Amino acid sequence: MFNIGAPNFFNQFNFMANKILNQLISGALLVSLSCSKPAEPKVEETPIPTLELGLPVETLAPNTNYKPAFTGQTRIGSIKTKTPIQYKIISSALANPWGIAPLPNAQFLITEKAGSMRIANSQGVLSTAIAGIPAVNSSGQGGLLGLLVDPNFGSNRMVYWAYSENAAGGTLTAVAKGRLSDDEKAMENVKVIYRANSAHASSLHFGARIVMDVSGNLLICLGERSSLSTRVLAQSVSSSWGKVIRITTDGSPAPGNPIFEGVGALPELFSIGHRNPQGLAIHPISGEVWLSEFGPRGGDEVNRLQAGKNYGWPTITYGIEYGGQTIGAGIQQKEGMEQPVYYWDPSVSPSGMTFYKGNRVPEWQNNLFIGALSATHIIRLHIGNNTVMGEERLLASEGQRFRDICQGTDGALYAITDAGRLYKIDKE
Ligand SMILES: [Ca+2]
Image (cartoon, rainbow, N blue to C red; front, side):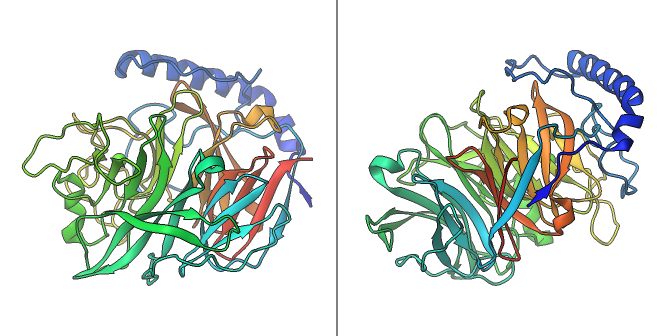
């Protein structure tokens, strides 16, 4: 057990400065919102009495001198959880876990990259691998990836998962569904419901998280497969690379999908212009879908998804090539392309994420928690009126690559790491 909630001298010392900074940023945000953003339905938030902002959590130099589109789009002030928090490792026996989702009875369903799916109980004890999962290609970033437990699992026992599959010409991201057997040992009636168009000889950028929206349809994020020749297809409406798709639980394009203009536009597209999204979560109040995606060097993003919108990659980005060159025309903003709600430079490698809607830590309600891989911590973002109001780094001393995070039925957070750990994070 470790305590990460204690205030420190630095915070006390900077109290007044923080309050002034807080007011300045709040004022700037209001001006920015009223001047440059179209009117959006306001999202009600559980107010925090005083959101004291410290210096931004990021202290490293950025990769570029690009300017954000609005105040608070990057390097927002830091926040610190006041509730005393504890965390513990409840399992270290997972092998490259990739996705975690709560099951009834305080259990969790977990995918492992090499192709197995297991159940962990509330003490972290793991089941044997569940039988009946189709083969995956786990080279590079591929494998058994994101999963979703049906919100009506209690009555239908349905599970959906995404994975990289061998296909003519390389690999592709596929989506399957199945019924978890009553004895929890096998996936029954497994059916592949979607295959990305098309295969590519790359082991990178599969995307592959799944959520169910308020209408009961599936949203799945798909990467653009990383090659210079394929990244431009994130802008092509006839390719499913670099997209978020919205399909029924049978795999057909969902009713009410937006219409994209262009030859051969795929009817399953929900949003376009993504690079490698590895996080999806439904906002608890608005029901909107939020997404995290890996940008290039210095351009990782959080986006609030709206049907039919273009999120810019590779035309606009706050990042640069890993070799240092600018990307495309080196622009960060363009008419007709959406700005990220938030971005990180340097990169943090944002992966799975969840909004907190529990009662264990009231000040966390509706906050967004994101596993960070290269930055080795859990990101906490306080969201208000669809903007990021403050950022905190949790479990940074653990030095783990956090791959996914979910909220258990007990109201605690549970996070998995590439090294095979399952953490429980809760109030003391
Ligand atoms: Ca973008």
